[in-house]
Image (cartoon, rainbow, N blue to C red; front, side, top):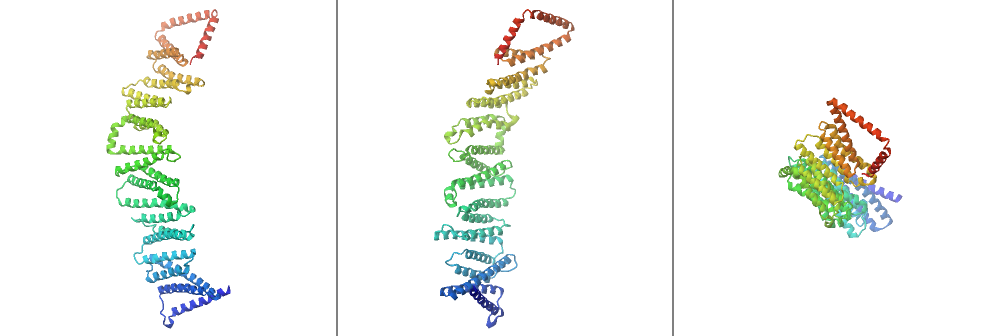
Length: 618
């Protein structure tokens, strides 16, 4: 150990003596400038490593000791020299110093010295030193022109791509399974420097800079499974670079609207999405990704582009309609094709729903076009009926034969007319409502789902109310009667209410429906007694004919209430008749009381028979 220390000290004294000679300019030596000292130091480093090589070839013990000491001095001087050159380069781009050819020569000499020192060896420190020299050499050479950080950023991208490709070449040449870490880290460092140097710059070529960084990340990330996050960041960077180029072009256009920008971004994302799908065979082998992973990347671009497209549809759009329609149709086509049963997706139905939602958004856009607005305004009252035609084909087409599940298309056929009616609102014609109601009757029969006819009930009631309003029918009974009849229809046809356990609920619903109609006549039509009288008789005869207790109860109650009310009104109007009616009622009660005891058994048996028969009624 002492031998190495003595050898290092002797070499140090020699270097100090040489420095003193150059500093004082003795023996005719010229005094050096700062740049001259950099060159001399670089030559000293090269000389030390050359001397080390000569000593190692001798192979004696003393030569090996001095070779090791020379190597340590060269490494120390090289570190100091590179640090000083780094400071000098930074001062150049701050405008404090100017570059000179001496600094370029110095960096080149050090680069050559490191290459000589590491030749035939694979030390990572030497590789980092070479990378450091290349960075400084680039900075010094570019410093002769405009002191632009953007030029340094581009230079770092070139260095990063070069070192990344060099690593690939090195692995193939030496048939290595894995590369040293320095071959992975150095390209990433160059890429990081590029990002830092161009942070405050935004021009027509900055997108290509981002693309270069993304390619560096992809090139490194594809080497190992552990580096896959870098690969994903690189893939994201490719998309970011494309959007950066688009943003720059958008910034040049004046007077653009937000909707146009969103459409342009959506169109770009759609193009990237299809590029991934078309280039899948090549990308799988290059990126070392599985088909599932690559498909997920395309799905993310579809999701992003669809969100932008949907937001754009809610804003004014002035861009060429063919771009809007093309983007929308490509997004729809992608989603619906993912919904095919042979697409290896786990949620095919959801993809179909998403595609159909985008079809609806495209329809909204078409309505906002001048020609579309004119057509849709003319067809607005008929849109519900027209939607039934489309829904009908959605329902009956053999989607399974085409490769899709039948379920999402049929469910869409169920809700499409209702959605269209919800958008048209009160501007719909009554005949349109009747057509839509008939369509749901067809669905109820085709799907054997009787409850779908309840939608038809609501639509028919809506149509009736519209007709009554158009005919200026102000009588409220016109509006109450359809509601009551609808309740009676539900009590009659509902499968669950037909069960024996649901008999009380069915009875209550019939009481509610018939009671609503008859009760309305009692409350608001006693001045026209024939109206509650007619309704009560209809209810009574319906109850007797159909053997339904609810109708009989409501009809009888309505008839009695109406009769008593009219009798009271009649007696108040004609007081003499009040005594005659009272006398007749008294005689009737006396007659009933007189015959009750003698015919108790017959009356009890009659009441029991009536009760038993009522128990069998519905």
